[in-house]
Length: 235
Image 1 (cartoon, helix red, strand yellow):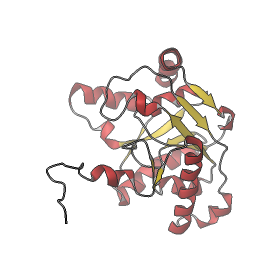
Image 2 (cartoon, one colour):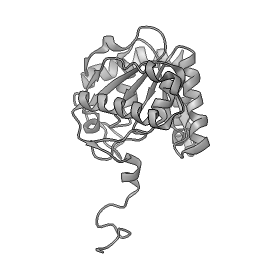
Image 3 (cartoon, one colour):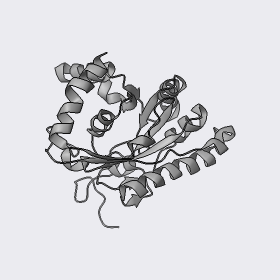
Image 4 (cartoon, one colour):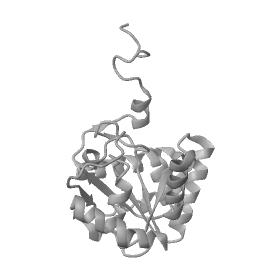
């Protein structure tokens, strides 16, 4: 109830008025049945702009830190994500990540739309980074199509570290659904999961026009900035 109230009366009208989003390929999103919406990730506002354009509700896998904040701000953030049916995603890897993916699998098994960012985190510099295998695990185990999506310009609206967004136009392109039914009987094969993930990321790259970097965005973010005190010196 809260989701539809907020979206219909608040989020969609405000985003459409202020940011005038342009949209292509919206008819590629299935009108019914389960599907994965796999998007590039430029800004925290991606999870606001994209669902506002759809008639169906989108359940996102959101990083678990959004659910564990302290103080009034943390409480408000947690309640908002819970009310909008966002699912906490543990990005530490191993069993914790697998448990988080099971929540996404349940959403798909219920015939709903699941939004996921294959890169696993926001791009640190606007480029497109290597996808993690979670999106392939979900697609193959749930046996659902994957709709590639390109968010355009959201990094200019709300770049990393910025709380109040800038008012400027954004866009999004929904690509044709990707069918991986030929691999359904090979779910769990890491070679196949890598192949499927790379195909999804390549489809996103073609839509977005981003430069592709074949490393994980999380790896780049974990490295010290050039000139930082803990950056390694010349070898």
